[in-house]
Amino acid sequence: MASLLLLSLLLMIAVPCHSATCSSQKFTSHKSFDLCNDLPTLSSYLHWTYDPSISSLDFAFIAQPAQSNGWIAWAINPTGTGMVGSQSLIGFQQSSGSMIVKSFNISRYGPIKPSPIMFEVSDMNGEYLDGMMRIFGTMVLPKNMSIVNHVWQVGASVTDGIPDRHQFGSENLNSKGRLDLLKGQSTTRGTTDSRQQLRNIHGLLNALSWGTLTPMGVMLARYSRTFKRTGPAWFYLHVFCQCSAYAIGAAGWVIGLILGHQSNGVQYSFHRNLGITLFCLGTLQVFALYLRPNKDHNYRIYWNIYHHSVGYTVIVLSITNVFKGLDILNPKDQWRIAYVVVIIILGAIALALEFVTWILVLWRKSHDSTGV
Ligand SMILES: *[C@@H]1O[C@H](CO)[C@@H](O)[C@H](O)[C@H]1NC(C)=O
Ligand SMILES: *[C@@H]1O[C@H](CO)[C@@H](O)[C@H](O)[C@H]1NC(C)=O
Image (cartoon, rainbow, N blue to C red; front, side):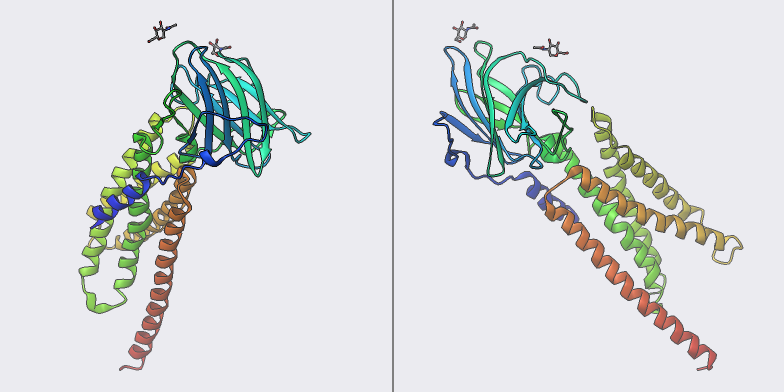
């Protein structure tokens, strides 16, 4: 059942939806291009005419900047597939309001500055129309370089003529692909990127285990005792729930460590440290099970205090870290909404049960004292 749910969720992530918009996009300055492509991420479009005899590429790149005073960028990467090595053209608005396009030879992560690039570029210019920025240019590519790795990006701000760092959501990290300039096809490693899938799986496993099962297990323990008829069953349910959460969570945690290890250039220290702390606390809780003193033992009260405080800490940290993770993964809004709804439902159930528990406790007390 859980695996079925997981599978359908994975399918939802993996299947992108398409609509060919670029063919309806018009250009003002009697420009036209032979081919166009709806790029799979960041609502971006590429139009171009490639003349193989002189290997010249006339192009227009259209995208919506992350903010109106942000920037858009398109690049060919002759040496790799990502940002490092990309020969980029970045367009943004100047303080006068007009668009400017500059070239950037990006050799590393971190601050960038305008510089010549490997290709001869002419006629660089840009325009800002209906919330979309457009950058134009003509590049002379090396002979026979008709299949290229290209990268595109959008950002939210520009400081002193230098584009600021972009976001690191899944769309931003998957805005790259291979482009056949002659056939017009863009094949993307984008949404089917195995690393991206690993990121999604990491998110799902951890939201399910740490973020959902753990609080459910605690609620089981806290409230099933309110209803005395359940007997010792609650204990086994609690242990089962938390052990499943721990097993699934451990898998998610290991994937997280792998992702962190592979991530070059970007570090999410807070998310990572919180994840490691959580895993240690979770492991402690599982071991606590074996060290549990007998019910009548003198130390049992201390064990209870310890077990409960660590348990509640784990819940708070888990939910915090799921939201941290959502910020990093930046999936479609539905995912965040879905998780918020789950938390609200769990919270509402807990509140209702807390209320019932107190009523029952008070009722039992008054009955005991009147001797009934
Ligand atoms: C781009 O930067 C790299 C690394 O610093 C350098 O080797 C290369 O020559 C530069 N390319 C151009 C066209 O300046
Ligand atoms: C480009 O490719 C064509 C056909 O494959 C070949 O005849 C030509 O020599 C190549 N030119 C260069 C500069 O590599």
